[in-house]
Image (cartoon, rainbow, N blue to C red; front, side, top):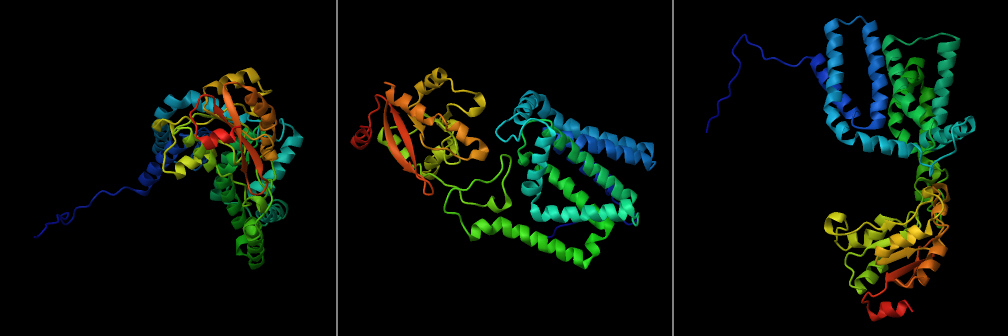
Length: 406
């Protein structure tokens, strides 16, 4: 079988998108993607303004400037449907996240900002890379500001200012709030790295063999810090280090995991295929995903769509002092109630505050006529912890479970 392929006649040309068209198309997509999240929108708007400013300084034609503005406007129009539907929830969550006290270093003050900067240097960037950046900055001050041996060309100035304007909104938002979780600053690392790269090029750092050797040494040192817990695994519980992040040499430490298979066995012994679970306390091994993990392993899909109720977290320390009347009212609809009386959790995540009322809760539930138990389970390998499981009164359970509750 023969296929004919039509070719353009001699002397004719096919239209191809120009580089400007492709750049504007990419800019549209970039604006649309940036507009789909509050941090990106806050970071991208100043970048757009500074780019327009420098574009005008280069005396671009009116048509080019209008095309640039149209591309930016079209990108944000593409993101508008999402904002129209989710503006309220997005702003509410942004306010909630900004005021979260769990990862707070304190209220806005110079002391708090000093603590924040220390954690950024040690946890977000790392000691090795921080030393490298400090060396580059010293070289910038010496060569550009003091001796004036080199200067930034227009492209370098534009890139540095664009990166600066991309960094400032996120940093200002975090420093003016009480939530200092470093994870929220991760998007700002990209423009920060670009700015450091531009400074390294302008000062000639990347063209010096000694400088590159120092860079390699510092990078390897930081890598060794990160992987050291893998080479020398911890055999006792280890705290990551900060309220808002972790020390580099503790990022990959082993955390205790509890085997919740006995919980599923107890539920099945009481004919509870999809139990309604409530719990008081919180930690890496004590939370809804961990509690439901045995059902995942068994091939179930424990989600609300499949008839499962997410385990009910009865109280968290952000809510203030425990309202026992409310807690005991919430627990009434549950079939399985769990707590760990002697468990403290990770102090730098304020989990000790979440768990400080576990023992009193266990005593209250044990006196509640609506429940039977507890069934005591031993959890953990680093630091074995007692976990108390209470069952709804009236459930038809196996003799083994009945015996365990006596």
